[in-house]
Amino acid sequence: MNAQFKVKRINVHIEITNPIYVYADKDMVNSIIRNLLSNAKKISMPNGKINISAKKRGKMIEISIEDNGVGMDEKIAESMFSPKGIISQQGSQGEKGSGLGLILCKEFVDYHKGEIWVKSSIGKGAKFYFTLPIF
Image 1 (cartoon, rainbow, N blue to C red):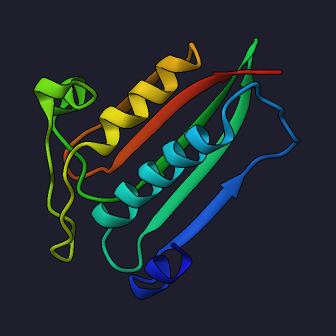
Image 2: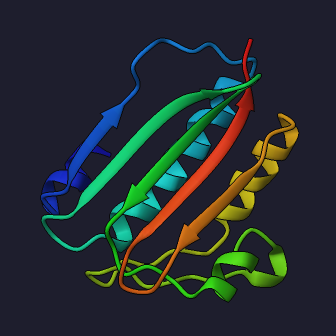
């Protein structure tokens, strides 16, 4: 995936101050992060920025992935984790997706008794959050 970020010259900043251990299936968590990063990369303009952070929130870890891409309307954001709300937004350089990645992310987060949500507005990028229980 690193090569994909280099092609668009996207700067990725990671903010994780202390190790936080979670009780989770590593393959599922890896899939969640890869899906969210792939979407952020797809939507980001060349020379864009992606911020990744992880913070302890009570008995959960909150992970966020934020891009400075095109953003989306609130109504779209509210329905994008539902099979009825499948949306495949074309990337900034014509990249395509199936729209199924976010549904898979939700299934994996739900499996771990966490939550997933997004905050976004048109022209201001998007910030995806998900939580997992701390070990």
